[in-house]
Image (cartoon, rainbow, N blue to C red; front, side, top):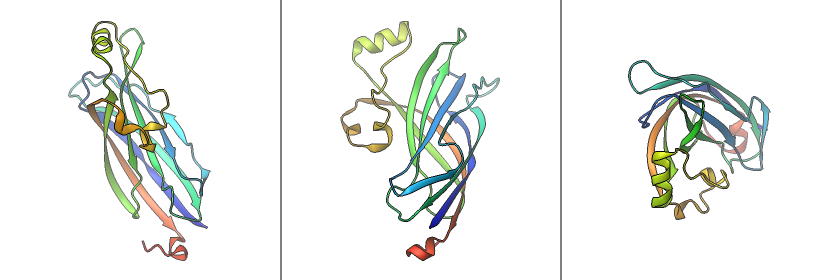
Length: 175
């Protein structure tokens, strides 16, 4: 069986309206893929930058997959949250990115977005906080109904990923 090892980190995020951010992340694959080792999902710590708008997390990612086919190549899905001074958490953005399909070291930038909501929800969000969320987070990476959403762009999450591929040549994939 072919093996894919993803070693890297979620470096941080920038371009969001406020600081004090943390990130919930997860990986998604097709049915032919099996996770041998590593955590399929996780969460970073909250970072409140003293200077600049970049929140640094340096959160490790270490995933080891095995597969018999290329269909359902791994994707990383992200949720960026803001924590205020009272400890309340507010969703700031969803995003996803495909894991690079070539071996080596890669810098990946993942653009995030959030649902816009009606004008009443936007008004309430400005005064009370909160805001609309997705009923099913699977929409982030599936794309089935994502085209029908009204969204607004948020910030960018930066990742550094090292990709190691083994035995893919046995399945007709040159690396």
